Picture 1 (cartoon, rainbow, N blue to C red):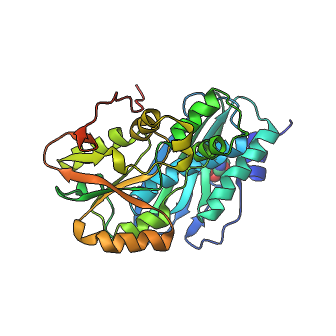
Picture 2: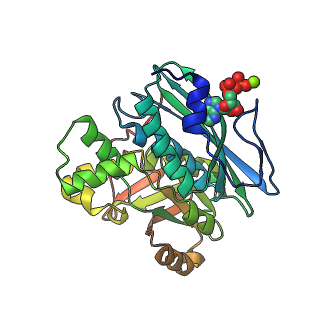
Length: 316
Ligand code: ADP
Ligand code: MG
């Protein structure tokens, strides 16, 4: 194709926004925004072959690269507003860029996020998004957990890593359950509205990107405590349960990353109100255990210690 970098930016990344807080969007050396509230900033990168398989459809890469950043803003209890994007690809394939942009803006529009700047380069394919949110209340931190807090999970866990295995093994998708699991990898549900409301009743939170046990242990370290979780209580989807023997399903749920569900802790006195909230938002919040004294994440199965191999995703 004959486009240069500036034409690509104009055609596929520049979209008018009605947001009055954007004083300067795409088109100058930097963007300028106004904010009366505290701002919350995160960045996450997706690298082809590392974070998503080569040949993943472009529309999914666009959507997922924003979704994983939305999840970080969600876990703080904040509302996403603006983002910048640094994208590299080996060649400017117009069809790919067009589909990428479609996937990206579909999710951006859904969450009212404006793209206000970025950088476009030639190189190995990677997408790095910098997302800025606002918060008008006490943020949900990893460090806010108290011993005795109930531990909750939003949605279901284990699906996305099972889905990734299905994609990698190129299993047939004419199976409803497999399709569901693969879509959970491709389209994680950022829990923005959930966490914004949860933050009024919870003490701490983390999004599960690398696996429940691994991410929960980060929350415990930050909160200076341990935890006890019960396998019998883990929220497993029907698709995961019917597709795998229970030992494998449990392993996906404990160690599998990529679900981007939220693990949060809240005082026992808020059980009723959280149950109500969960029903109103139509997102399950499942109690899976408690924060405890100590520095270990203990896993119980039918009230006995559960032996498992810990292989939560590690980057290095
Ligand atoms: P500079 O040379 O000053 O870094 P660029 O020529 O790289 O600026 O970019 C021109 C404008 O386009 C800037 O406002 C930049 O933020 C924006 N931009 C570049 N790439 C992207 C992209 N992928 N998405 C959104 N905006 C982009
Ligand atoms: Mg410049």
